[in-house]
Image (cartoon, rainbow, N blue to C red; front, side):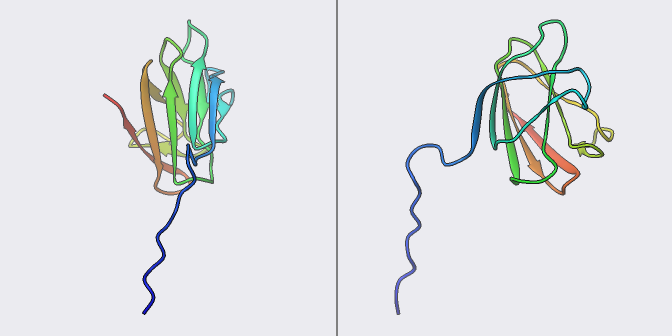
Length: 115
């Protein structure tokens, strides 16, 4: 009997990452569409909670790090919801926090935010 092969992983960050993103827009339709698994948001308008939008399909989770100096809004895909919020409602992520959004279905996400 042959032993099971040991999985190997490449060095470094094996996940698609977009760093230095700019949140934009104050509605879901205006928000920046996220394309990577790991997303670092570093700029946004100081006077408003600019936003980013989760993708409808793709990875089973999306990481959003907020380093803008203010809160940002994370929107679900159109027609979707995050946790028990209303459909298309934003989820606020405070400055210097990281939120992980787990896909339950293509329209339903569950959020976990750092303390």
